[in-house]
Amino acid sequence: MADTPKGSWPAPARPAVPPKPTSPPVNGGPKKVVTKTRNGGGLNPSVNVSVNKTTTTNTNVTTGARGGHSPLDTLRTAELSDQEALHAFCEAGRRLGRELAIYLGCAEEELYQGLRELDGGKWALFGFDSRVRAGRVTRHLVHATEAAQVMAGHMAAAWIAFEKEFAEPLEVAQIQPKKRGFEIR
Image: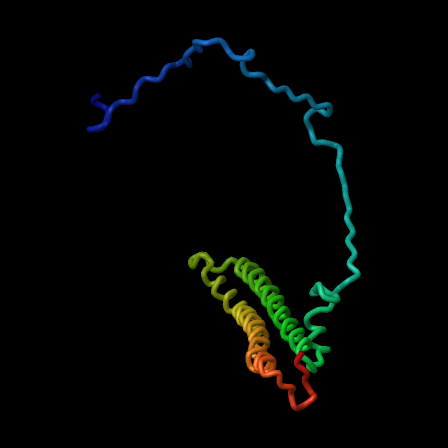
């Protein structure tokens, strides 16, 4: 006890041999797993090669359920002559803004991750300078993403404002518009 530090107890002595089991083994004890290989345990000579070829004929990624047109095509060819056309125009603008915001947001995240790992930064700063520079580059994509989200919101707000200002009062009063340039049904 003289060689142990003050306040500590010596460790108990460990047995040299593990204790013998008191009960017989169940099902004959542990089974040995023997793996036999025919090629001497080296590399497996069977190699499977598969080649997949994918061809895409439709390059229009933003096809919708209505007619297969993209929101941009709907905006380009819109003739704002009646209520349904205005609704389709506003809905297409909203969908375009949402899709664009998703694509820009994903591109911003991928670009940020790639740029921050590009050179690793200075070791003394633990890569903080690289993250700051990547943020300066991708900040513009963040603003573009926010602008696309704002565009989608304003397209929806335009339709709501039309319904509030023109459609509901004319339906309540049953008044026909004076000019025949725009029809409300």
